[in-house]
Image (cartoon, rainbow, N blue to C red; front, side, top):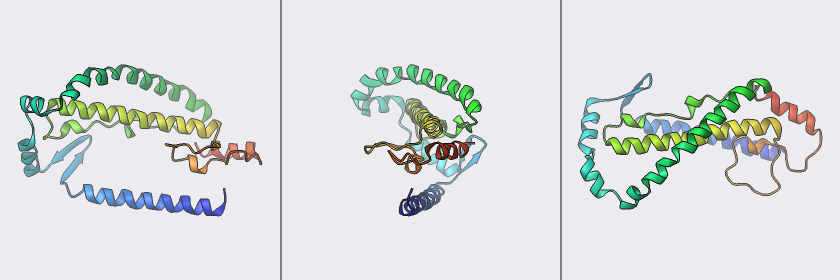
Length: 192
């Protein structure tokens, strides 16, 4: 990797850090406290949330009909997602210790907290938690796969690929065979 690419990656990392700080500052304007896994809002915020809550009949009438029609198809996907969750979790539990790869903490990716929002009715909470599971699961799996890729084949593709993992930019260039095995060991050691 040349110096210009390394400098750009360092700038990107610095900007991501600034973005995270700014987003956290913006989020902290809404007053709540985390007590373990429980979120507690101030009393006036809880009251305001309850006033904004749509009761079931109003929600049912104002919701888009296509949402109700596609609901069974969407929720059926929980079965393959749960199977995928189980198999990837077992894969990580069995394989990562053998290769000495640090395990991906599932709880860092799959977070259920939207049910604590007082302005959501039961069905909206269910939808939100379903989406939290699905998107968190995909991020969890993506991290497991990216660590696996870094261990076995940290090589960029010849063509541009969309949606690459955060490690991808530091992978070896396609076709760069110089000391491949030595550099592969460096990538592997970095996963411990």
